[in-house]
Each structure stands twice: as structure tokens, then as C-alpha cells.
Length: 88
Image (cartoon, rainbow, N blue to C red; front, side, top):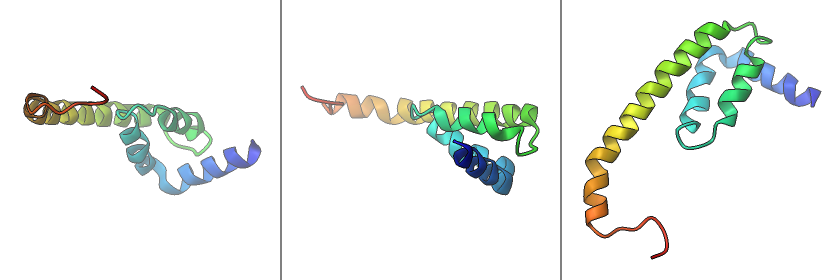
């Protein structure tokens, strides 16, 4: 477990605040763990946790609104065409 923590601290230390973007882009897709792990090791990597939370909230808001907009434009025609999301 120590090697995993050491690797995570090194990764966050190397990439800094730009590590937020890929971790948060997985969150709207239903994978919350990268963001949780990133927040857990942020203090050890000497990053400002409050700034990370603020950047994360802004990024998640922008991504959620963009996905909502895309679904509102493409979702209606896709559903009306008879496409299904799984077995009928």
C-alpha cells in the first residue's frame, strides 16, 4: 500500500493542479474514485486543497452543463429514431 501511495504522491506532485482534469472527466461518467483519491493525496503533494476543490467544482459544473446541452440537442432525435439503450 505504501508503494501505491508513494506513486500517487509522485504523480500528483509531477502534474500538480492539471491532474484534476482527467480525474474529474471520469466522474460524470460514473467513476468517482479518481477524484476521491486525488483529494486524499493532495495534501501530501503540497497542493492547496481548497483551490483543488474550487477548480473541481468549476470543472464538474462546466462538464455537467456541456453533457446536458449535448444530450438535449442529440437525445431527442436519437430517441425518436427508435434507437435503444439496451435489449428490447
